[in-house]
Image (cartoon, rainbow over all chains, first blue to last red; front, side):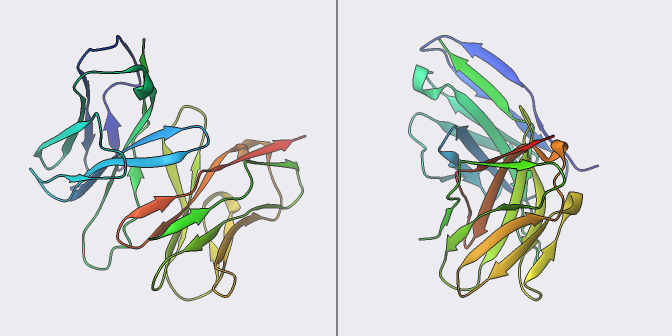
Length: 115
Length: 110
């Protein structure tokens, strides 16, 4: 069964802390994505990556950075967490294989609370 | 730029009745359209997609969606709702990247 695994389901952090959210996929997908989900706003793209060591800004990259050192792993980093970053964070992956329609496979989500 | 609109924040249906969750889209070129479902405190699960061909697309759990090019719509339907269908439903369109709607909460009651 294909899988996207987010290491932490629930986190509570304090303002100013550095936060790492880890995501691993076992489908050998080239593309990986980080979204945040907030009520009434749907899913908003933070960053995405098409290849190892490649990263592209999404719609709301401010306050976040990412790292992709290995194909299967895509990390989201909050350098200095703030209360407005309290949210559900969703990792997803997709294939670049020719003819693939690009549907996303999601992890279970990481609910972050910043106090 | 591509966009997706889900005009209803919530849809309420009695079990056994048909359900429709509405979605309209805007994209240049031919659209790739998707529906995803999210159960409480879970990630999104793929339900179905339209790429080309038949305008009526069948997906998981008895859901189907009707693509209407003239109305730029891709409404999700099910002939007979179940209480277990209660969840958050997202419509999405792909041009270069996938763009999601804001979601519609489906509440199915006995």
